[in-house]
Length: 116
Image (cartoon, rainbow, N blue to C red; front, side, top):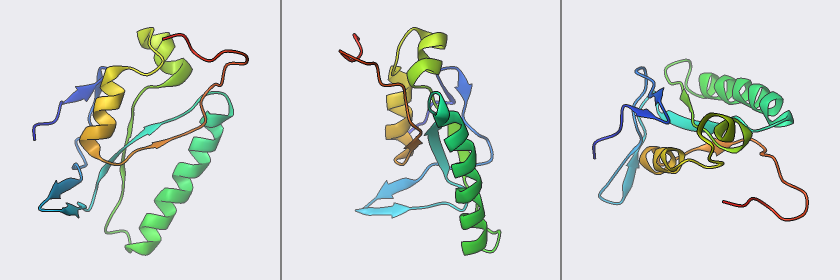
């Protein structure tokens, strides 16, 4: 499969590789690219703390031989400000292409949800 070189105009990290799936098995590279959605409001703070914990856990578990190549993709308020779309198609494509992703808390509108 050919990956895009950027999603939502954000370049894919050059220091990582995509997780592969072949013959019913996942192959995890030493530096997998993991897309993340930072989140809105407190999500930004939660993400910063979480990322430090994840990075420390991977470093300890693999003796510094493996690391995550974090890749921000857009959703929520940040996405809307930049693309006028709460969940851009490129974000959905990136989460599918890289097979694993993580998101922080996003804005929840009171009384009705999002009109998309």
